[in-house]
Image (cartoon, rainbow, N blue to C red):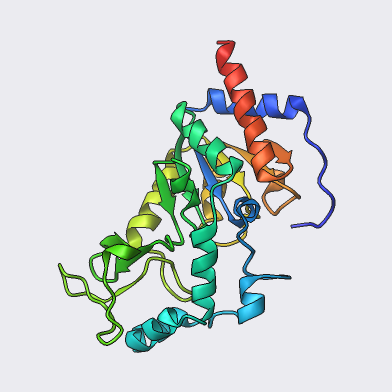
Length: 268
């Protein structure tokens, strides 16, 4: 992704994107961290990033968890640890207009599914219903054996009896967020690629689409003849494959796209 200043998109760009969405049979969206910055969630890397301040997690984090889940849970419960700082940031964040615009596109029948790389729960908080969180959800816990998920406050974690275990299968419970070295849960991975196979249009918003396997989804849409609509401040690795690239902050840009879709629907 380049650091060149964004070029303002024209009204014709938004109208063209709205036409593509209106013509689509099965439109989906892939979203990334760029959408959450406007909700006050800092990036992981770079100035002010969570990992910049607290240190980047080990690349074998999941393997460490499997070797000693009790120790990993104690670190997670540490009130001064980096995970606590991230949890507090996510708890305080609220959806912005980008999240609400995408939820409204679902409500009016345009978006069939949203796939997000974000773990912040903001799409759900905005009212979006058909969501696949490919990197998990920080507000949930997950059983490693049966893949059952619970809200964090639904499981009482006893610091003296770690790790917590599933009351149905006895499996170890961890955060639903996918750690470095951890495979994407099979149910999520299957769902994401199934959506990619069905889609004839994909809005790629707030992501450079370089982290796999999520980055493969819009490429699959493109390679079987679907059209891509990019929403980003700058050009990205996927820009050349996009039918339309809308430049600007996610909240303002997706709100304008929603308005263009509504205007197009009113004319039909």
